[in-house]
Image 1: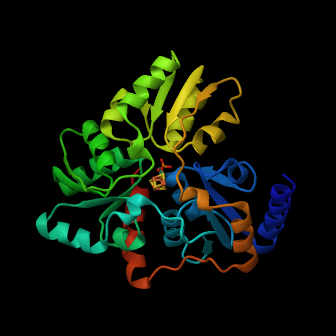
Image 2: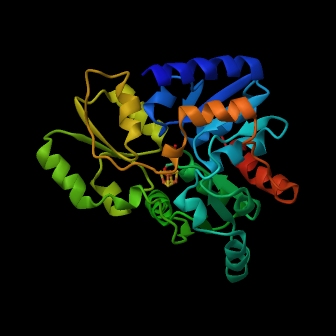
Image 3: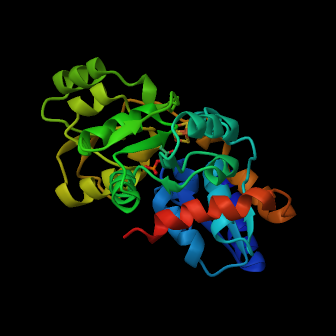
Length: 307
Ligand code: 13P
Ligand code: SF4
C-alpha cells in the first residue's frame, strides 16, 4: 500500500503540472481505475471523451488502439500510452492489406471495422464501430448506402452476435477473436447457473454466440455496468475480463458478484509505476503516420456522428 500511495500522489502532482487527464478503460486494474483515472468508461465513451476533454495531455490507461483513437480525435494533444506493448488480439488479427483484398473480392460492399484495430486498418475502412454501437452503425450504413451486405471486421463473434439483431443485412465476417472472451463456453454458463442458483448472466458480445445465447443480457462493458446499476440483481456474473467485476462491485456491496477470472494480459501491462513514468518523462507519446491519420479519423468521426 505505501508504494501505491506514493505512486498515486506523484501521478496526481504530475497531472496538475502537465495539465493531464487520465482516461481509464473499464478493464483497468482497481488500483488504477479507482485512484488516478479521471474519466472511466467503455471504448465508445473514451473516444467521445477524447474529443471534448480540456487538457494538454491525455494518458490512456487502456490498450494501444484506444490511445491511437484518442490521438486521432485529439491530434493537437499529447497522448501517452504507459506501455506501448499493450496490444489486443483483435487488433493483431487483420492488416490494411487484408482489407484491400476484401474490397477487391466484395466490390462496393462497405467496410465497418471494430474500434479494436490499428489506425492503419481504420484508414482502409468506411466506418468504425464499438461493441456499444455496432447494431446502430450497421443499420445506419445499410440505410445510407442502400446495401444489404456489409463487411464487419475483424471480430467474427461480434459480427455473429450483431447478425442476430439485423437479419435483414448480411454481415460478412473475419476470423479475428478476443483471446479473453473466446475462452468462455456455453458449458461454463450452465455450470455457473447450477452452482449459483438465480445468478444473472451478463456477457460481452465478443463472446462466441453460443455463450451469448446462454446469457440473460449482452452488451458493451458500459452496458453491463449500467445493467447492474439499474437492475441491481442479487447475484450476478459478468462474462468478460475479470477486473470489470472488481470495479463495478465497488459501488454495489449489496450485490454478490460471481467471479470467473479471465484476465486481459494487455490491459494488465498498464500499472501505476508506468503511468507515473509516462508523465514524468513524456516519452510514451502515440504518433500516427499523417498518411493514415486523416482517413482513419474520418472513419471514427463518421461513427461518432451517428446518434
Ligand atoms: P468495450 O468497448 O465494451 O469497452 O470493449 C472493449 C474491449 O476491448 C472488450 O474486450
Ligand atoms: Fe483486446 Fe480482448 Fe484485451 Fe479487449 S479483452 S483489449 S478485445 S484482447
